[in-house]
Length: 148
Image (tube, rainbow, N blue to C red):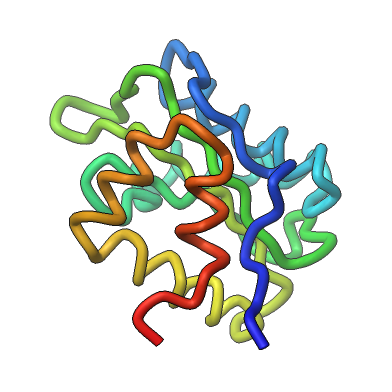
């Protein structure tokens, strides 16, 4: 049985953001709109980045905004935001893709993280992700059983 990692309504393409904070806030708003987190989760993500730096960078051009389960997670899930133009945390640390993550606990989201790692570790799928023009392209990358 294949696991559905992401729903179509949790994907946004061609998003314009003036800086990293606006991009992360937008990402959090999509998690709120899709019923994955409470609004308090957004501020927790921003606060964490301001305190610890851009720890959410997981690959060149890719960020994984997230906070702790107790910061407002309703249910496990992700959203994906593809920016129109890259934004920088600092020079040399630019992002084009944000994968907002919400986990209920320390273990339940492992399958989601494995799928994210699978997609971002392959050059071809990374290019498809960064250059996606249709939501179906992202649904295919994350919801299909690849390499199985």
